[in-house]
Image 1: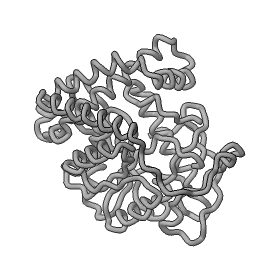
Image 2 (image 1 turned 180 degrees about the vertical axis):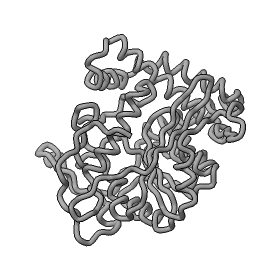
Image 3 (image 1 turned 90 degrees about the horizontal axis):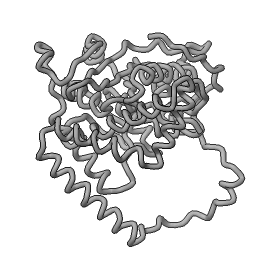
Image 4 (image 1 turned 180 degrees about the horizontal axis):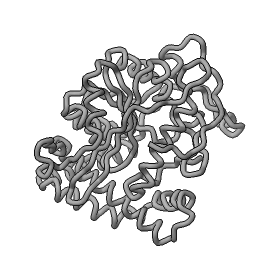
Length: 342
């Protein structure tokens, strides 16, 4: 797979004593403004009555909507989600963030072309919301009769190699197409796996997402300051770990993404350095008529430092470059409103 972005200089060496502790995030730099805002630690505050009422009302509304969509065929729920997202999404403040990111990523495109990509993004997100209601029905795969499948695959041999080699592996993906599918595919095909995810602040949504995902995926590891130890345990057990890698990580290594520097989350590269396990990329492409294509790359030949250990910074650049190629091929299927460049 071609990698076009330039690799950054060698990173500072990692600590001699490498273990799960080495995976923990480095402390972020604190500005004078941040220091001025610092206060003495205090006990967590109970959410205000207004916030609890807001969360309860929102939760009840979403629960009711999901019940209605659950009664519909999955294709109709997906279509309705896309329809309403195309109408409502462009009216939200984050639509402006998406357009601004698109201007920097595609300065050669016209404003109309960038607007079309942004609207396509909303369509993809809306369809994904409708599909989430039917998450337990989305995996419809028949290797012997692809024409009857909702899912088609490429790179099956790479997936099979992961399943039978008896080794742990790291799998990265991005917020493209329906990014819930790789974890569902792994569980459906008998791959012993775990997924790192970030739970929403709303406890109702957090419980709902966990319940629905746990029915169709492998182990779920919630992102937290202690998650690195859980991730290490996953690999110690010989499992396969899936991680989304396309969001910003303040204080992380600098990488080049669409010609602009940004910070990356180095967790996957640090794990690869520590465990010397293969790293694969998996992406999902949304196809017409409610179908999907899942692609699995061969293991990446990650850059190494003079000592022969995996170079974390350069590996994150390679992974980021793979994601950029995916996004450039189907830009309307990526979530452009993330503040990736800060």
